[in-house]
Length: 396
Image 1 (tube, rainbow, N blue to C red):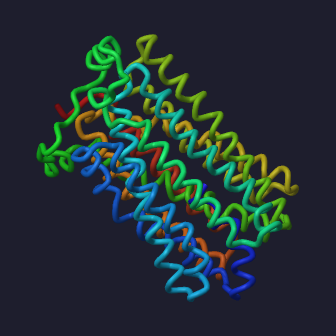
Image 2: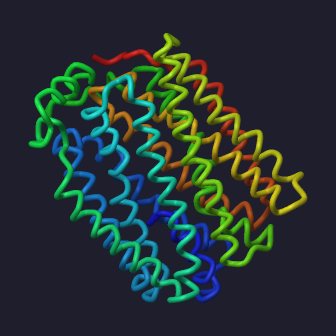
């Protein structure tokens, strides 16, 4: 919710402050500046201090930054960019911390479904943020979006501190039977304080496959995340309310398809299909699906046809949750948080470059050029993933 609200609020903000496409791209990308800095650190901290502590810190940090965004905007562009970067710092620890928690709490045979379920919460948040923001802006003006969403994060933090635990050993409500089941069916996690073998991690081709493919995947994903309402407004002629409503639909398909993909992946594994083959199949769908439908956008003549292409693109993109996003725990369960931090650093770099580059491309070119770059990277990612990735554990 906090990540996507700017993609709607940017419409009235750009009019109020007189921003051009390049400035809009700068504002949209500033979130990723901070997001980039804490990816690896988030995994290291989660392994050291526990996923509960790190995720709780991240949420309260970015919620405060979100609530202060209107004040920062009133002070000028540099202050706004700083506030959005601070928000990114908090959000940067979320995915590594979540990966760390799942590696300690979820049996191997339920990995794809659990990861898909958690990530579908992110998609649902995008749906709620995109659906609620236009109405809040109409009723209460654009600053209300940031004030209300930031407050929700503070309330979530209080509930999290009360209910969550970093591992079964730290949860007094977890029975002895459940703890025994989890110990028997989850990989051995890295002990806190144990050194990280950076050279070993970076010496393996499957790790670099994760890094490269995360970059290729996130370039297109983050462009759609941040620029979709602007595309609907500029190209399809939707007003603020319609831009928000139709931006919701692709995220609904992602929430549904992510869980469908997770169920399919776990079913194939349970029937004896190798984890490597499952990961390659799911990620190929996650790359080629969006590539096919984004190439169709230029030839679609109706607004609803364009929305349908967006929905299909994002829905098939979510199969990546059972591909590269599950693969960190496959190849190195003891370092899953760190590995996700490493690959997501590349993914966030794609967000920084892709979001800013889109503004520059639109200042000198067209939306077809924007989609063309994304499709090219999807194709590169497909080749790299199928040649170099593996579902086998390569780190003890």
